[in-house]
Length: 81
Image (cartoon, rainbow, N blue to C red; front, side, top):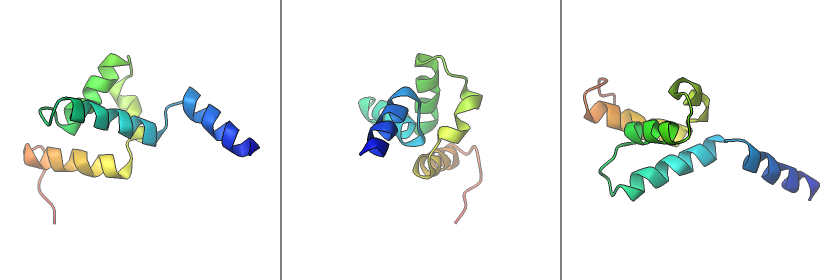
């Protein structure tokens, strides 16, 4: 029980990968698909005065895949199988 309270306190005080991903997802959804995941990360960083270089460790595996698909669709990187 003590560990759960400590985990909740930690997550409330500090940004976690899951919390960051959820916030980025909210931005994408609130723009009804008019904003891709790359832009949503930039918007979140701008709104919260966070350096874009510092969020690499906060990007979850699923968010990374979505960003990769966006980058491939915009021809920023080669498509992979």
